[in-house]
Amino acid sequence: MSSSPVVEFKENTVVVVFGASGDLAKKKTFPALFGLFREGYLSPTTKIIGYARSQLTNESLRERLKPFLKTTTPESKLLVDDFLNMCSYISSPYDTAEGYQKLESEINEFDTLKQNKESHRLYYLALPPSAFITVASKLKEFNHPGSKGIVRLIVEKPFGHDLPSAQALQSQLSPLFTEDELFRIDHYLGKEMVKNLIPFRFANEFLTGCWNNQYITSIQISFKEPFGTEGRGGYFDSIGIIRDVMQNHLFQVLTLLMMENPKKFDSESIRDEKVQVLKSIKPFDPKNVLVGQYTKSLDGTKPGYLDDDTVKPGSKCVTFACMSLEVDNDRWRGVPVILRAGKALNEGKVEIRVQFKETNGLFDSSINRNELVIRIQPDEAMYMKMNTKVPGVTNKVAVTELDLTYKSRYHDFYIPEAYESLIRDCLKDDHSNFVRDDELDISWKLFTPLLNYLEGENAPTPLPYAYGSRGPAELNEYLEKNGYKHQNRAVYQWPITTPDVLKESKI
Ligand code: BG6
Image 1 (tube, helix red, strand yellow):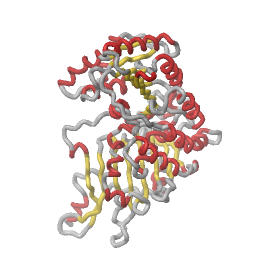
Image 2 (tube, helix red, strand yellow):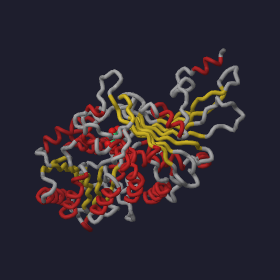
Image 3 (cartoon, protein in one colour):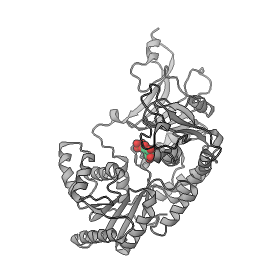
Image 4 (cartoon, protein in one colour):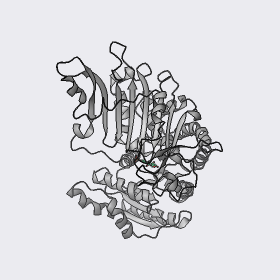
């Protein structure tokens, strides 16, 4: 756990991207570094070195990266070449000394050029987990500046496949890099609305009073993607949607949404409270999980999961899951928390829905529950469904909303990409939005029995749902049974343009 003072990288920083010729580096890591540079959050004195096995040159790396660097204005177009000139490339295997020695001499040359100041290094492992330990050990051996500088190591998920593999990975990594030096990325923690959860919850006193089981009746966190595995099924087949997004992304959202007030807003106090939530989650009941797998779209144009040639025939891999859990502490006991995630659904959307209890009976049952919706993506928004009098000569009460849609409320604003935001945090040595070892341990403890059941000999066959649908037909019944009340779209839709209820009031 972190105890070092906050040191911000400014000048003389070297960022080394391992796996530089891969997709993640090309689509996320380098574009994020460029985004920071473009917005003035990365010093032009930074040196960026790509490292991978592919035979690329400095020039061919730059050509490869260029189409992925997002420019927003004519001026920012001019910055592309400046940025690319900060980037160079080393082609070398991951498991031999030679490349790391070359890397060290390049870093030293750079340090010397900058008057031999303290060495600041950020190593970003955009690599599959099978390469983590090889690269981390070599970095420790050849490229750790010891007391003459600072090292930060960013690692990407997956942090293990289950509890034993996560613990094994951790026990190999911890003798090499301290918890202070390690930054485990979960890119959901870099999303604007996820970063907003702490200020939203703790800077609004009125919420404190009602953020508990006295007022809240259910919570739903949902992740919907409109595309399937599209040829990557072979990779996904041993992972499934629960490992892919629930154990990490949705769980991170859950802990921020449900944790207690941290003692301070520093990374350890925040992560301590997240861990407390995880510790309070009751063991999952594997029988109370709805699992599905997508089939061909109804019009036959989109393939089913099993049509992917890279997938094991007859695979029971879960591409949709919905599960209800309980945080068993005084604040949340009795409130079902529903996690729902799926690929190949009818839309792409990630949101949180907090439903409040019904009013005390003065109104009839047509009064809807208040519901707070936090839209993480697309189009960041928060809206609170409220019951108010319909305007005009009527006493009717209808549901409407208090609406904070970022695009309408703010103009000329810049929301960093999740990776930009997290690399910036790492450069500032802020661990708050990175995953700590104990968080991982507890979440794998919770998920491993469920995964063993779903992947074991007696695994249930996932329910079919058509590509492009909302999920298995059983979903609505499951949600209702677990405390979530679906609101009738005929009565309320957001955003409302012509509310039917206003028309009705003229009758
Ligand atoms: C990744 C998953 O972690 O998150 C992918 O491996 C998923 O399967 C992606 O598509 C979703 O991220 P985002 O930022 O597009 O919501």
